[in-house]
Image (cartoon, rainbow, N blue to C red; front, side, top):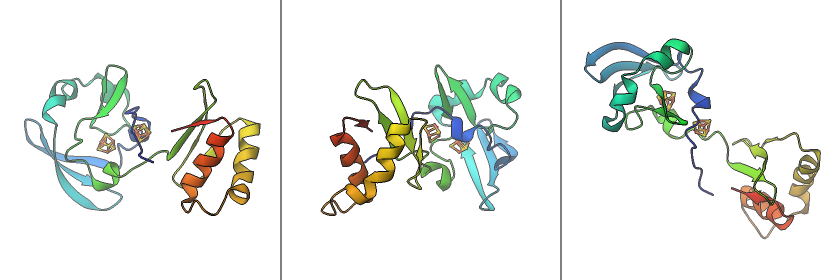
Length: 156
Ligand code: SF4
Ligand code: SF4
């Protein structure tokens, strides 16, 4: 199941202390450090995002957000997608989003296979899923997806 980042920016809103700009080395180039891994890297602003990067209202209003995050229409986008640290590139906030048959969101599942949902019926089904689904489907993620789909839920 492919994960599609919706570019909502939520995961980057409090990473300003972790993705740190050390100093500027060019008009759109920065010497940076990824604090959590202790690695340095050079970040060049993606060419197609230089205009939005040049607006500083957002980082001024959100001092805890990553310095490279910028609004772009209804999205919040990483402006160093090409040069972002590896942990950013591989981050997946959710492995599954669950909706009712009409597409209304009911919950999401994190990479640790924890369901986040206020829907008590869905929670009960989720908790029962593991012991009820056939072992013939080897992948636990896929098994849960099949189980939910058979019960009328939409899963992405
Ligand atoms: S990884 Fe998730 S939280 Fe982060 S921007 Fe993408 S959809 Fe939003
Ligand atoms: S470098 Fe990009 S993906 Fe990583 S925290 Fe900053 S804005 Fe988010």
